[in-house]
Amino acid sequence: MHVVDNPQWFEHTVLWLKSNYTMVSLSVFEDKKNYSKRQSLCHLTFDDGDLTFYTVAFPVLKKHNVPVTIFVSPEKIVSHKNFWFQEIEGYDTVKMAEIVSNNSLIPFEMAKEYGMHAVLKCFEIEKINEFIKIYQTHTDTPPKEFRNMNLDEILDAKNSGLVTIGAHTLSHPILDNETDEKCEQEIAVSILKLSELINEEVRYFAYPNGIPNLDFGEREKEILRENHIKIAVSTEPNFATKRIDEFAFPRKGITYGNIRFIKFKLFLGKSWNFVKNIQKLSERRKREILRKKLYLC
Ligand SMILES: [Zn+2]
Image (cartoon, rainbow, N blue to C red; front, side, top):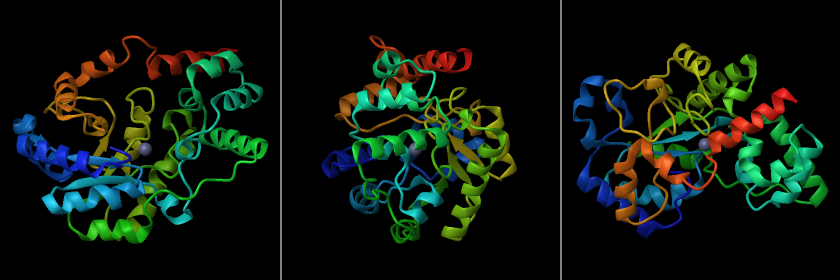
């Protein structure tokens, strides 16, 4: 989950999950012996540290005693700056397509058709920030107000004993787009700085965007192992089995919908991506096409 803006929906969903699964902490999955009961174990995670976690989700989790993990960036917590994808919310997609095509090899029509997110995810984080700066200057748009939790709120959540804190890089780049040096920095420094902020060892990590072999690969897993991470979560919608790779740990997204819909999504597992993209190009496909344009032109 990312943003939780409906407390009724959230409480209803948590209660349904609680009645169908044993809600455990992420540390339970460090031991593969526990995977034999895999279908009945469930752990909830929240990426980015949106303030609605603290104001909406956290009170419900406390009420029903449900352990969760949040994945945050120490740099954003300290600088009070939003992640790039939060900053571009509501931006004019045609204007952004124009900026991208004027400053890269992506043609305007393609940038417009594929959408801002898929297009920006083909670039290094420095380039994404450059596009945003140009947009803000051209359209006289000020940076948005900080929308994530501050350190006090994160520490309050942690001190409840229910919330584990994991790292989520410094600036939320698509790691696979970055140089070896930048990738190492984004991962290692985020783990180190976060452990200093929360005064505790950081054992878990969430890859930004999280699609295996598109957003991250073996290089990232190796850096994580070197930095003593035990589990790194992806966005591959699947159940955890004994055979899974702890450094590409699957997760299923639940962000909306009634219980019937959530049940359907959980049941489909990996096939969800196929169903979701039946009539349109998947983000993976779009980005593969865009990448070819960028590298082959
Ligand atoms: Zn994220």
